[in-house]
Image (cartoon, rainbow, N blue to C red; front, top):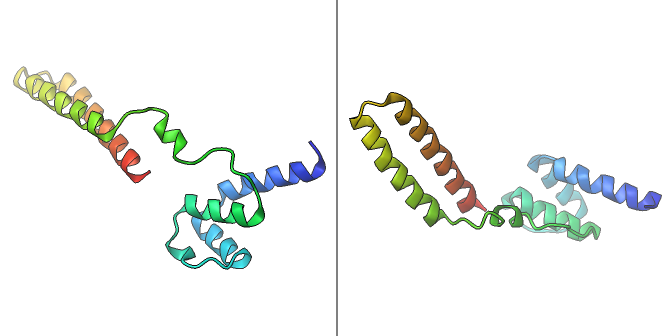
Length: 117
């Protein structure tokens, strides 16, 4: 790895760690892109890297798709857990109700993550 490659690699990491506000300012300076202020972080990173000639190693959405679970599958799991939670409530098992409630909340957060990507 030469000095130039190390500098480019370091610069790429710095871009990934920048905030959206910093990326927008950088994109405004470097590129002539229109609609910078409406872009999301992933879009800004891609545009800046393209303008600088930096190749992306991974697409941002690949990470989420590796799990290969869909929103529909998560929602069916949530429905099943809600039925179990109702059974636990009828049995007055507070501990199980609490556990199931937390599982349902985690799955709901996962559906939001997948749908945003």
